[in-house]
Length: 289
Image (cartoon, rainbow, N blue to C red; front, side, top):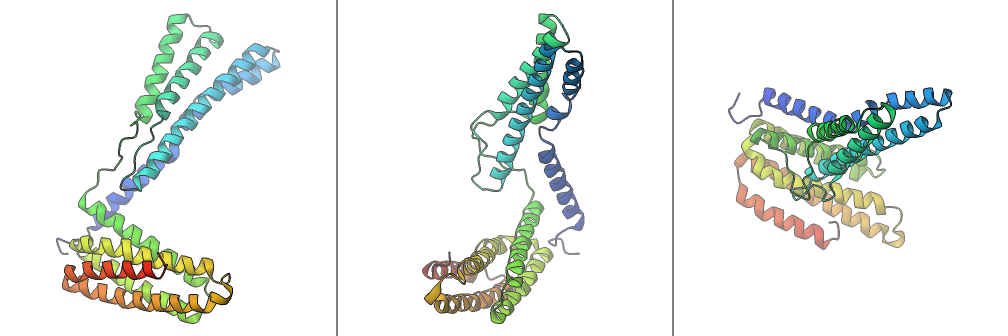
């Protein structure tokens, strides 16, 4: 195996890290809903005994814990979304800080008014709850730029995932087309895209050149096709012109996909930069981007 090829073991580690990260995002705030569940049981028990005061306190405290968990999930979701943007930033609002304070308040009320601890013991439990939330879910970043620590291999895997997602979207839209010519052209774009992905996997030094191909050519193909699918059948007298323009665009993209494959084989980065600028300009002129 070449030293520059994508290492299978490194890819498996990347997949494992990604799955772990997604699992932690999915579980964010969940414990703030699960751990206070005894409050619901206490509310039912107190209702059976006719103790309305404790029923209201139990349900109220559980609601505050639930709100705390929701705030943690909001912070996590916003940061996860920001990670997909090169200029993404963490939310300015202190979601986690507010969540921790709410959890502390609910803990203080639970300890003092339901468990009947004294003031200082209740405050100690509250401080522990606040610290626990911040340790478990982290501190707010207050609008700071967010990014994941990534290795060179991770950058390759992320690019490959993005390319595969774009090809999958093209494949999905192709299957819903009735025009045989367009289906065939999109099918050939898929084939060239698969070949280019294979080249990136075989030599990760191609990533710098291929990343622009992925961001411009593949994304452009998806956007152009999506525009056609969205407007096809709703353009009236302009339908024929739209199909003609779409056909010309696909034909040009098919040539460029093939040429890009050859450039990667020959490591011709200068020609690629020129062609990328030309293609972007042509797509904008045709109103496809």
